[in-house]
Length: 156
Image (cartoon, rainbow, N blue to C red; front, side, top):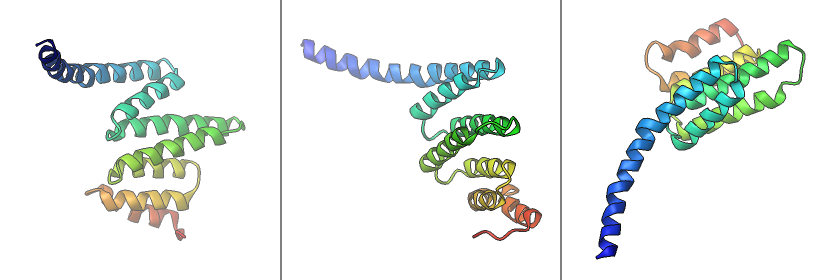
């Protein structure tokens, strides 16, 4: 009898806990991301975004924002003539993880293209824009074409 009660309790409590976790805790973590970001605590925001992407790997927004924060920090370091390779590497890893978990999400590739464009690597930017154009609908499916004309470079 006790075993039945335990099993029934688990089957009733487990869905409730999952509901609470995904519908209350994840939005709360997004609020924490926003607060950390607006307070200038970007490393803390990145930690929260890492948690979200771990829990919800099919949500591209956490990868996009996390990588943007990382490459923005790298870009800041470039402007100050400081070593930036590690932050840029982290951003690339974040994009790759997001692309692995969301292979047809055009936004991740689009944002990666923006990153490469910001760092002056037109070939890598065009590759990312090409993939983005392949998976997106109008008007974003024209981004590769537009950028190709603007950059006027051949992709290897």
